[in-house]
Image 1 (cartoon, rainbow, N blue to C red):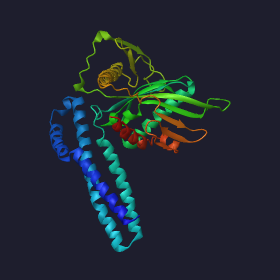
Image 2 (image 1 turned 120 degrees about the vertical axis):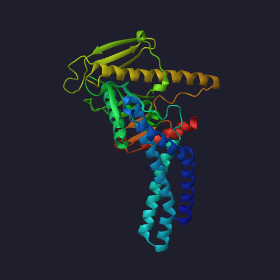
Image 3 (image 1 turned 90 degrees about the vertical axis):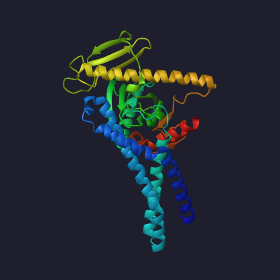
Image 4 (image 1 turned 30 degrees about the vertical axis):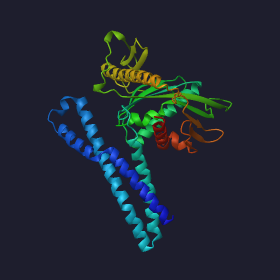
Length: 367
C-alpha cells in the first residue's frame, strides 16, 4: 500500500474520530458518570428495583462508551507511530501488522460512527421485537423460527440479554409468532431497521417432491416504554383471558392456567405472555408489551400527521425489505440499501451487522 495512500487514510480516520468525539461529548458523559455513581451509591437505591436497574444499566453503558472512545483515540494516535517504525526498520512484517491494525481500527471507528447516527427520540431504548409467519404455510412458520434464531444469535454475539415473552408454536414445525425483548441500550435504534417483511426462497424440506418454495415472515420492532411515557390504559378497556401455556416448557409451566392474554378493546391490540409460572408475572409482562405497542401506535399517528403537513408522499420501507435466496444460488440482499452477501449461512447465524449498519446509514439519508 503506497505511503501516500496510508497517510490519506490516517488523516481521514482522525477527522472521523474527531467528529464522533464531538457528537458523543465525552466530557458530558464523564459528568453523567459522576452523577450516576452518586445515585448508585445511595443506600436506598434498591428500594425501587426498576429505578435501580435503570441507573445501573445506564452507568454501565456510559462507562463503556467512554472506554470505547478512549481506546479508539489511543489506537488512532498509535497508528502513525506503527507505520513510521515499520518504515524506519524496513520490516515487512511490522508493516503488515500496521496495515492490519489500520483496517481493524477503521472498522471499529465506523461502528462507533453508526452509533452517533442513532439520534431519534426513542433510539436509545431497549427493543421489543415480534416475528410472525406470513404467506407460505409450514415453510413460513419454519422461516419465522429461523429468523428468531438469527436475531437471538445476533444478540448473543453482542452480549445483549434477550427475554422471550411469548411463543406461539405452529402445528407441524416452526412458530406462528414470537415476542421478545432485547434489553440493551440503543437496541431499538439499532434493530428498528430490521422491521418489515423478510422473504425466503429455498427447496422446501417439507415438500416430498423437493420443489422450490417462497415464504414470508414479518418483523416488528418497537421501543420499550419507560416511566416517563405516560401511556394511560383504563382497566375497563382491557379484557383479560388466562389459559394454559403451550409448547415446550419446564415442569409446572404448561400444567396451570398461568398464561395471560390481554385485549385492548378500543384498538383491538392483543398481546400475550406465557414465559413465567406466575399468572401475575405474565400479566405484568403482557401489560408492558401492550403499553409499548400503544406508544408505538401513538408515535406513528403523530408521524403521519407530520408527514401530511410536510406533504410527504414517500412510501413506507417497512414492507418486503430483505430477500434470502438459498436456491438456486446463495444470496441475501437488502432491497432498500442494495447491500448483499453470498454468505447466507453466516447471516442466518446472526452475522447481520453489515446489513444493520447499511440500514441505519440509509435511514439517515432519508430524513
